[in-house]
Length: 206
Length: 136
Ligand SMILES: Nc1nc2c(ncn2[C@@H]2O[C@H](COP(=O)(O)OP(=O)(O)O)[C@@H](O)[C@H]2O)c(=O)[nH]1
Ligand SMILES: [Mg+2]
Image 1 (cartoon, rainbow over the protein chains, first blue to last red):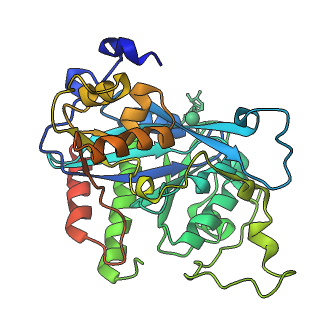
Image 2: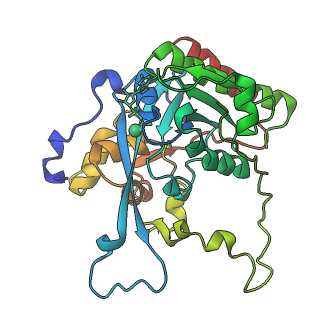
Image 3: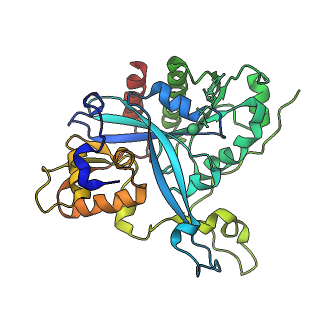
């Protein structure tokens, strides 16, 4: 980026600027396999045009021969889409759609740890691609709901059959959605927030 | 047709137990993803900046500001998250946090820390989020 021309650096449009009263932000992470609808969901509920942030991961393994090249040889760029929803004039919610390469999700420090919770988007044609991430969220104690993005040619399973297949406890919400529709994506986020609230009430949230 | 099946995992209890010996405990540290780290993430101070920490300029860029610093100061005349700054400036998150850390040290910007999930959850926060989403 040419910072000398920084007068021309694109910034938020006037209507995308947060008020000066904005004091703090919270975040929710949307996870799921490639093509399951994460970017679509971020875009359908975000008040700003979705943006992309990147991180550079470097291969720090011992024994990797670095004689021939620069760091960029072993560097990988991981990109994440995100959007924003103003909750009040003091509080802002950010939604992050995780990058495609699952093995990088949990290296991005604080992405999950600080999140209020996660939405696991699944496609019933490829249910198993979400198994590992659900396990990792469980290990980290990040609460999540499961949203089934209903593609027209995907198999439809009764919720209880899905719950058994995914080995989810009865309290974890599972719901159908169409992430292209704002109302449906909003419903998923409402379901997650209600679930987090119920955990808070029961004191089970750790 | 029946769906494929998964097995639930338990929450890891902190702190993780030390590996029992040279042969043991290799399951996680040996997995390939551990070979990757965020570029240049060694500085503890930077780690405190979250993707959603809000950054606000304290003043307009002065003549001493570098072009990069001036760009940040212009962008966060109104509060803006580190993620948004990284997106607009097309800088990787870790590079963005280095730049912001300098600006915080020089008292040119203020950082407003995010609210993170805690052991003692804040019900009124979740209620506010629910009400905010309802208005969407
Ligand atoms: N039919 C249908 N298509 C969808 C739906 N959600 C997403 N898509 C399409 O699936 C493709 C992949 O979605 P995307 O959001 O990019 O997935 P991501 O890789 O998880 O970010 C896009 O072409 C979307 O338009 C859905 O609910 N129904
Ligand atoms: Mg995507």
